[in-house]
Length: 310
Image (tube, rainbow, N blue to C red):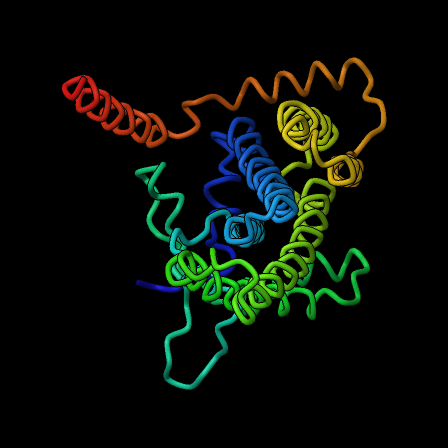
C-alpha cells in the first residue's frame, strides 16, 4: 500500500470534508474525548485495584490507559490509528533504516466508514506532526516525552502479556521471596509510565481543542461540550467507584480541573454544547450500527445457550 503524504491524512481529508463539516468536526472531538476519558478511567481503576491488592489487574488497567493515550495521540495527528497494539507501538518506536519498510497501517476508521481505506503513514511524520504542536505550545521536553511514551508502551505491552498469561498462577503465591517483589515493582513502574502518558494525553487533548484548525469555527462551543462531557463521565458515575479511595478520588478531581477549559460557561455556550452533543449519535458511522447489530446477534446466541441449559 502506498504511504500517504501529510496532506492526504484523514485529519485533513475525511474529517475536514466541507460537505460534512459540522457533523464530522463534532464527531472528531467526541472520539478524542472518549479516548481521553477512557485513559483517565483505566488509570484510576488500575490504581484502585493496586491499592486493593489486585496487582495483576492493576498493571493491565494501566497498560490499557496507555493504549488509549496512544490512540488519542495518533487520532489527533492522523485522524486514524492502528487497531493492533504492536502496530500502534511501532508508530512511536520504529526507527528509519535503509531498505527496511517502516510505515504503519492505521485501519480503525475503515471499519466504521466503508468509503475509507487504511492510512499508511510513516512514524517520523507522526512524530513531527505531534512535535510541531507541542513545541509551539512551549513544551521544551516534548521530544523526550514522546520517546519515553513510545518506549514505555512497547515494553509495558510485553510485561502485560507476561503478567496476564504466565504469572496468573505464580502471582497468587503470597509472600514469595521473588514473585511478590516482582509484582510490587511491576505495579510501581507501570504506574510511573501510565501517569506520565496520561499527563501527555491531557496536554495533547487541550492543545488540539485550543489550536487545531478543525475547530476554528466553533472552538469555544466544542470546549464547552468537552467540559460537560468530562463532568458527566468522570465526576458522574465513575467517581463513585472510588468512594473507598478518598485520596484517589481527590486526585481524580484534580485531573478533571486540568481538563476544564472554563470555570463557568455562559448559558449560550451550554446550549451550543448540547447541540454539539446532538450531532454525535449512535449513527456516528454506519459501521457502528453494523457492529452493534453483530454484537446483538452474539448476545442473543449466548442467551439462547443459557436458556436451553436452564
